[in-house]
Image (cartoon, rainbow, N blue to C red; front, side, top):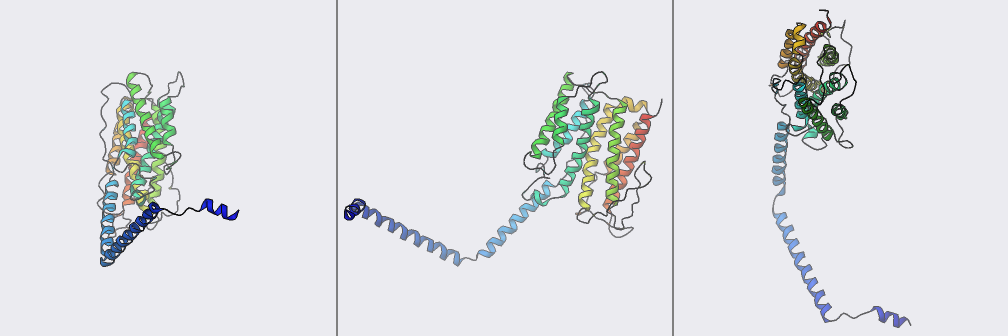
Length: 352
């Protein structure tokens, strides 16, 4: 019985199978010879210089791409209100500022996981500053400027925009920050188009503008304080407008000095556009309160914050030393803009 079972499973290879096996052995021999030839050729070459040059060229490419991505967008012009529909200029400015976060070279960088975006920190800090001002104006439009006294019905586009812009800036999955920012920009643009058709509301009331400026004042005051905390001797020399003293903050670490500087610069860049749009939208109200000069003075100070930084790094010199102190210069401009905006707020609430 055992011999019978063995005979069922054992088949003697015929001539055809033997030929195939011989052919396979021949191919294996040829592959082995070619692999040995490749190994001999690599052994004859000196691979180290080739790898070094390749790595150097890759690093040069990565550095150039990182430099290109680190360029801040230029200040954009704010068009006049040609349509005559109030609110369109401000909505357009907000849409342009928010779109700059994801439309600039390199896109949105703050949540990047790979080089060169992962290695950059200046522009991601700038993006955070811009996003802070975008959130503030979107909130003001959603909760105040788009609502009438007669009926408090929220605008759905602005509700979507406020929710989208409140995404965690570093989020890269569930949700992806870029997609939320695009969604918010599209919602603001939809609101602007509906304003042109008369399907949305915008109410340029002095109380609404005053409430937004209060939030702006708080943000500028905190930025000035953080910039002062970067001084080498940690002596706060700039008082926050409207307060008796500057709140004490721990000294800014030297690795965070440039981050705070660029966050302030991004805030100023976004606020500059929004204030120019406010000048157009609230022009009659500001003119009646004699507040236009103070608003334009604040705009002038913010324009100064956007001057080209010629130094390759943010310097943090002390006193009258050899090096400049860029944090102190930025804090000075922001503090003066804050003082001018405090005058605007005061004039808005004064009795006629």
